Image 1 (tube, rainbow over the protein chains, first blue to last red):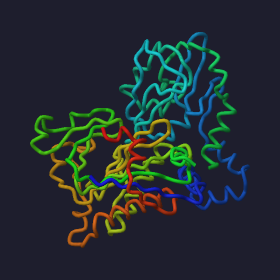
Image 2: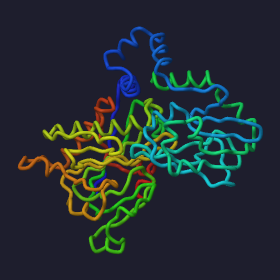
Image 3: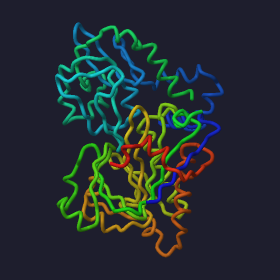
Image 4: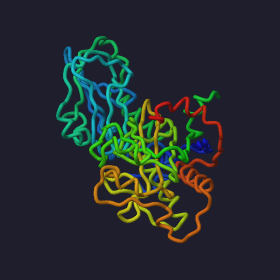
Length: 181
Length: 215
């Protein structure tokens, strides 16, 4: 078997993220104008075409959201995440009564021939999973914060929620991740 | 910068290209769609083929001699793209490469990720993203024995043929496979906006970080 390795370098990684992530919003010449006009122009485009970020939820930097109500935390992935994944065709979720750990993967989502791990934002015991996702995985795209919820967890360490981002912080995080590399 | 740091840096993209001379194999993705293998698993040995289960996305496919299999290892977060954009860039790499030979290929329609010439599939994609790092990748048919594809529903899409660069270029004299591989990697580098390509012959670094490729 012939196995050859290769490495390729770039002088300017910025060029990639601007065209790749915003190409579905604007044609190429407008992107370069965004940058020359500065952050203000990008921000208003972000508001018009941006992804939905809901109030009242906490967010992880791996783009999962948590809704904490009493002793139950409901978890799913954000609108930003579902858009970047593409159409979801398959979801793998943990078993009920299994445990999940903060920042460790708890399942996977398949879209466009790519299997992406999903990371748990908190630790705890899985009390329920969304069985509708087996037949309707696209709910994650059409309703990422409601019908597309993935699992309900009993948090083992509620203090972990405090290290997650609030909506404003998460919005800024998404903008920075998409724009500035 | 140590090797792992360098791998995660957006300024350098690492990857492997395998030119398979070992036994032909059928591979399944995470969904284990083995109903798309049309012959009993026991018959594979008679064909000289193996069956492997992987954690990648996508359906069943075939890998064998005279296919170029590329697996870029990249931290998607470091270059600011998600799965969809990554896969589209892999598709663009293959389209660009096909056009070098005058082959008019197109990206797949919705639900048919891959690269097609008309209704004939020439390039397949199956990726895994774990901790934001990609593994597996793409397979482009240079001149594999297309009969192997008759024993599967390739990528789970029935009634569509599979083709190859050889088939689509008729009498054209193709360069050596080594040259073809270098061209394909250059197209990939260009699609990701990377500038130059350095080839390394020692696979040990990548294999240490890609332990599940050998599913």
